[in-house]
Length: 249
Image 1 (cartoon, rainbow, N blue to C red):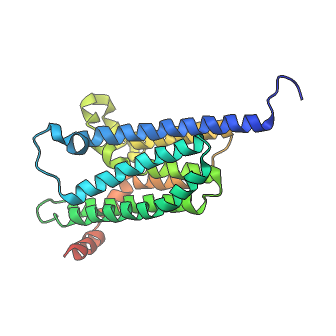
Image 2 (cartoon, one colour):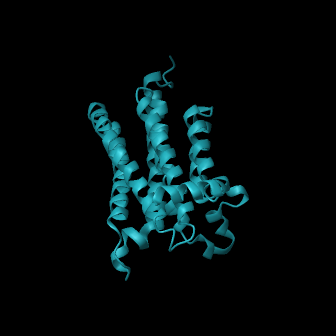
Image 3 (tube, rainbow, N blue to C red):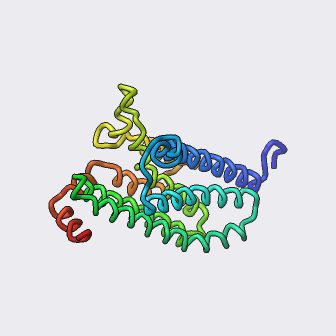
C-alpha cells in the first residue's frame, strides 16, 4: 500500500463522520425552520399578547420539540462511540414516539372539533392525520432497520424532515416578493422550503455515495407526496369531509 493511501478502515470512519456532520446540519436547518415558523405562536409566545394555548397544543409542541432534542442526543452518543447507550435509549424512545403520534392525533381531533367555527378545520385535521402517518411510517422503518446503519440514520433524519411543513407554512416568505413560491411550493408544490431541504439532503448523499440510497428514495417520495396539492384535494374531498365530520361528532 502506498504511503499516501489511507487504510480502508480510516477512510470508512472519515466517510461516516462526514455523513454524521451533514445530517446534523440538515437536522439543525429543520430545527431553524420549525423555530422560526412557530416562534410567535409557541416558542416566543410569552413576548406577545396572545390568549393562552390549550393544553393539547402545548403538550404536542413540547413532545415534538423533545423529538428534535432526542435526535441530537442520539447523534452525539454515536459520535462519542457510546453505541450501547444509543441503542438502549433508542429502545426507550419507542414509547416516546407513541406519545408523539397520540398527541398529534389529539391536535388533529382538536382542530376538527372547531369546524363549526372555523371553515377548513376538517381539512386541516386530515392533513395532520397524513403528517403523523408519514412520521410514524418513517420512524417504524428506522426502528425495524436499526441494524442497518445506512438505512437507520437516513430514515431518522427523514422523520425530522417529514414534520417541518407546519412550521415552514407559517414563515411569512410571501413578504419577500419573488421568494413567495417557497411557501406555496410553486409548480405542483414541489419547491416549498421543506422540500428544498429534503432535495439538498438527497442530492448531497447521492453525490457523495454515487447512488441514490433506497431509504432516501422511498422516504423522500413519501414526504414529497405529503407536501403536494394532491393531499389538499384528498382532505377537501366530500368523502373525507363527511367521514371527518362523523369522527368529531
